[in-house]
Image (cartoon, rainbow, N blue to C red; front, top):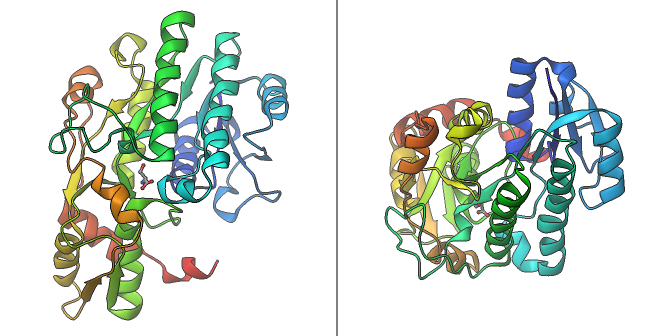
Length: 317
Ligand code: SER
């Protein structure tokens, strides 16, 4: 069994991906890494190491010294936070990627997962059913870093035969850990406020339609992509993955079916401009054809599961 390292394991994706990979591969084979000195509670089921994704030598010596063969590199600043700290966002989102791509090029790693995002698209991209290959002129720091990262992944795959695999995640909705710093985070915040206060003020306008996905689908898709035979992975930049597409108003209406008194109002802030530059829905036929991607959760099932499972105490941790 190849040893796996998840860098940025304490984040919204990492927490659930680590747990699932430990179930599949055995806890001892899956190392969680994050910037915190002490192991976060939800990563306690297996080995944990404090790693700084920007410390190339620290990351290299850990991977080589522990004979890690696969890396999931999840440490990044998301769209809204990156706009507030562009220099650091660019460094964090790019430098760690080169560290890992170079380790693979040198033969230390057999496989890499690196997440991209719908943020690689921009205002000149066709908004509906955005194709796999299309105009990409991102206008956010986050989007620029993800697009550059995609180009480098493909370059390393073509030139050095690096087996790097990637997904352009839409907004991800989950209840086990909180998202941080994204434009799509309203679609998670709304559940906590609905449960605690029965009302929510959305930072995106009522008609802002964005691509979204329930986390269980995202984790399953990620692992299916990584486990697929190498020759099925024809896209080495990043795969479009579609699932849900809804507006704040449509999400609120679905929540009202469970909490009839729930109300929503709208106070768009700087994140509105980011949302306006992104697709409304995604054409994922390439992923479906190449390696069999298929989402399972629709809007009503996602809302049901979220309302059943969110724990408002997470907000106080
Ligand atoms: N959820 C991310 C964000 O909003 C999109 O990749 O930044």
